[in-house]
Amino acid sequence: MTKEEGLRAYLDEFIYRGFAQDDFIPSFFPGCKTSTIPSMFGAKEIIAGDDVKGERILFKPEDIDSLPEPTISPNTPAHNWLEMQKYYIEECEGEIPVHVCDMQGPMDVCGQLYGYEGLFLCAYDDEERYVKLMQKAADAFQLLWEAQATLLGDKFVGTHLFGWSWIPENVGATMSVDSLVMLSKDFFDEFYKPYIEDIAKRFGGITVHSCGNFGTVVENLAKTDDVRAINASQMSVTELLDNGWNPSKLMIVCEEANNLPTLFNLAREKNLFLDPTVGGIWPDDKPQNWTNEQKNAIIEKINYLQQCAAT
Image 1: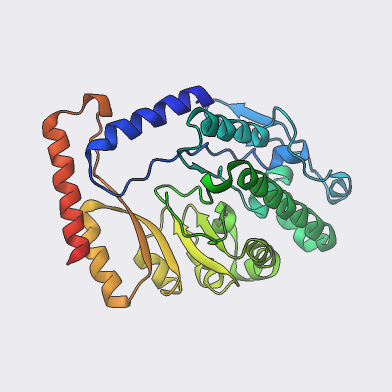
Image 2 (image 1 turned 180 degrees about the vertical axis):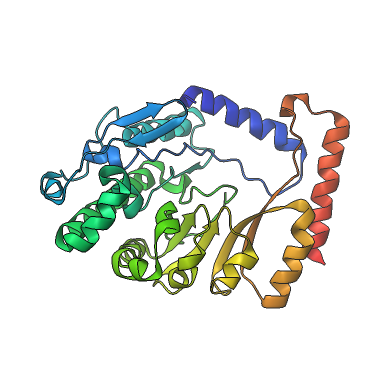
């Protein structure tokens, strides 16, 4: 959506949900594009139908030598997110908080710039240039994050994770690392762990999001310095634990309302540190079409969830 369409859609949502006494916090999220940080190196955005990606601009290790330093140039995805965030703040007079855009980690950025096959081979064949490339991507991550934090000030919400609308102060950064599904334990430890730790140190901690089943490296990720939390879109709490996640570290999870009693029982049994977002509450109809009967059903479900949490 354009920034104008996004503003209208969000404000409508805030109004429609106003009848429910839940813990929903109104806030704006600009969006997600894997082309965002690649655009800071001059890579063009490529759109094919609903698929959006960054242009591949590296084809051999020597190309890394001429890769420019990251910048936020006008009319790029990175710059456009800042313009959208600025628009939200100005239109609402700074009354509603705004999230950081989706922030891709160094390996996912370099996978766009070089292709994953080229990046993995470079790690083994020309490690010096691989390190140079990954460090530039880490620098770009910091540059874009800090630009958003400076722009939004005390209305900045430092997470892009679905449903995680409130976070404590000084919690660090949040990073998408979907490439974890492709990595072995050894490759992770040697060629990616140092960069996650680097970014975590820059921000005083890191929360890692990944899609897919990345069970192979869950235990290694849990042992990575300053990784404070995990958000797994397609892995359950049980799967994370079975693969070695540290139960004392936060798991940001999505769960259907019907499964919540089981989740809470597991949390108590194993003394887990959980922050769940609960699905299955809202009807599929558009909010403006909700009937009073549907609204009453929503309120009953919210009351049920509160009882589950209390008992």
